[in-house]
Image (cartoon, rainbow, N blue to C red):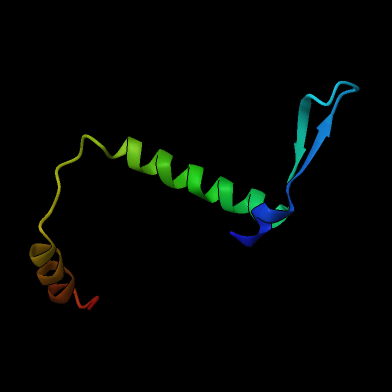
Length: 64
C-alpha cells in the first residue's frame, strides 16, 4: 500500500499528533479491509465446506 507513505499528521503547538490525513486510495483500501473483516466475523459460526466438495458443487451447478 504505497499510499500509506503519503500520510500526513496534524499536530498541536507542542508537536502532539491530533489528526491524520491519508490519500483517498489508502482510505478506500482500509474501508474494504474493514468490510472483509466484518464479513468474516459474521460468518465465524458457520460450518465450513471442504474445498473438494465446493468444487464438485460448483461443477454440478455449471459454475465451473
